[in-house]
Image (cartoon, rainbow, N blue to C red):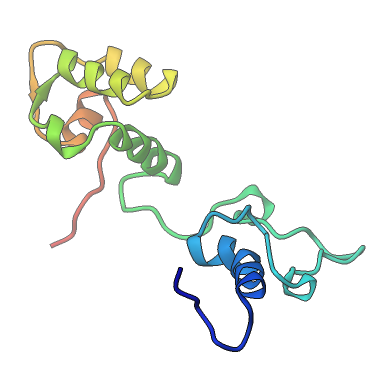
Amino acid sequence: MERGSSKHGPRVDEQMAAEVRGQTQGNAPAGARAEEWHEPEPAGDDQPEATLIPDGERRGSAPAGMTAEEVEQRSELGRFLPMSDWPGDAAGLRAAARERKAPDRVLALLDRLPEDRHYRTVAEVWAALGHANETHRW
C-alpha cells in the first residue's frame, strides 16, 4: 500500500483522510463542516429568518405578456418534456411526462391539450392551453 505522507504513520494518515472524506468526495450531509466555527450563525431574536423569497413575494420581472406565476407554471411544464420528445402529439407528450413522474398538476394540463395537433415547443403547448406567451418588441 502506498502511503500518502512520510510525516505520519499509516494509521494517522487514514484518520486524517477520513476526517475530510465527506468534503473531498461531496457526500457530506448538508451543513456538515469539519470545524464548528464554519457553521453559519442563526438569526438573532429580533432578526427575520433567511429565505429565498422574502415576504413570500417574488421580485424581479416576468416577460411582457406573462405573470411570474405563468412563467413558473410553463417552466414546470417544460421540465417534464425534454427536447427528445419534440415534436410530439398530446398523447406522446402525456406519456413522456408520466414516464418522468410529472406531478398531477402537469398531467392535468397535458390532458387538456387538443389531440389533433403536433407541438414543436413548450410555448406552443402553453398557447394551445389558452395561455399567453411573452410578447417581443423588435
